[in-house]
Image (cartoon, rainbow, N blue to C red):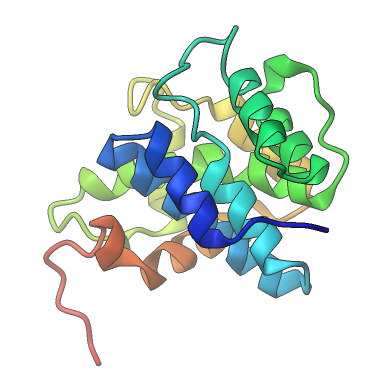
Amino acid sequence: MNLPSRDDAWNLLCEYTQSESLRNHARSVEHIMRAYARKWGENEELYGIVGLLHDFDYEKYPTMEEHPYKGAEILKERGYPEEVITAIMGHATYTGVPRDTRLAKTLFAVDELAGFMFAVTFVRPSKSIHEVKPKSVKKKLKQPSFAASVDRDDIEQGIVELGVDRDEHIQFVIDALKEIDEELGLRGTVELQP
C-alpha cells in the first residue's frame, strides 16, 4: 500500500482546515485510532492517517451534499489508497458506504465519542480529561441538551459495530486522550502525580 506520510496528511489537513478546534478533533481521532491499531496489531500509520483526515474537508465543505464526498475526490487526486477513502466515506452514515473493515468500524466508533469527550471535559471545573470517568460520560450521553450536536445513535451504533464493551471503549478513548492532553488543551488545572 502506497500510503502518504503523516507529514503529508498533516499538511493536507492544515491546507483545508484553519480552525484550531477542528484540528484538535482531527489529532484526537488520529491518536485514538493509532492506540486501537497498536492494541490489535494493525497498521498504525494507516489508522492514524484515516483518523487525521476523516474531516479535513469539513470546514470548506460542511454540507451533507459535499462532506465527505469532496474530501474523497481530493484524496483520490492526491493518490491516497482506496482503503483510506472508503473508511472516511463510511464514517458519514448518509453516504451509504458500508463499514465492512475494522479500520472503518474503528473510525466510526471513535469519531463522535472523541468530540463528545471534549465537551464532557470542558464542563468539569478543572477542565481536565484526567477527571473524566466512563460513568460521567454515560450520564452526559443521556442528557439530550448536552452537546446536542453529537449524534448519540452514531456513538451507540459504532460501539455495536466494533463489537467492544461500552465502558471499556469509553475508558480506552479517555486513556488515549490523556496521553496527548496538553497538546489538545485537555490537561486543565489538575495536578498530575509523577
